[in-house]
Length: 148
Image 1 (cartoon, rainbow, N blue to C red):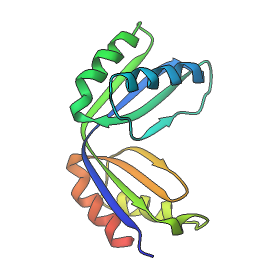
Image 2 (cartoon, rainbow, N blue to C red; image 1 turned 180 degrees about the vertical axis):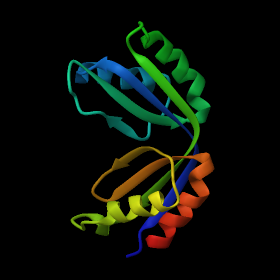
Image 3 (cartoon, helix red, strand yellow; image 1 turned 90 degrees about the vertical axis):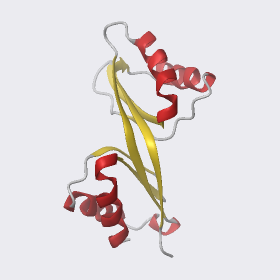
């Protein structure tokens, strides 16, 4: 079976640096975002090295102002929100990826060959999603399509 490749554009990446490294805080962040009616897509929590960590997630660019209003309330001087809008997501989906070593390596190598600025990677057993800058989207998409 050939993998399906789907794309989305107008994606904002939000990274919250220096947040408390506990799941209660993380769940509260996503509860508050859900209460605003904002759909979160990609989520990545950095490995905990101390009492602080970083949390990254994506939302549609249309929800940027809602998210900025919320993240500004989180910023007590220690939490540092970083926002990057206007990105694109490339997702490779294939049930055949499960227990098939090397698929991610092939995807990452193809993106590297064209110098893709990858902002975030999330994976599951059957999906690899890359958040890339809009300026790198066309070449990254073509490169990934050529190896899949």
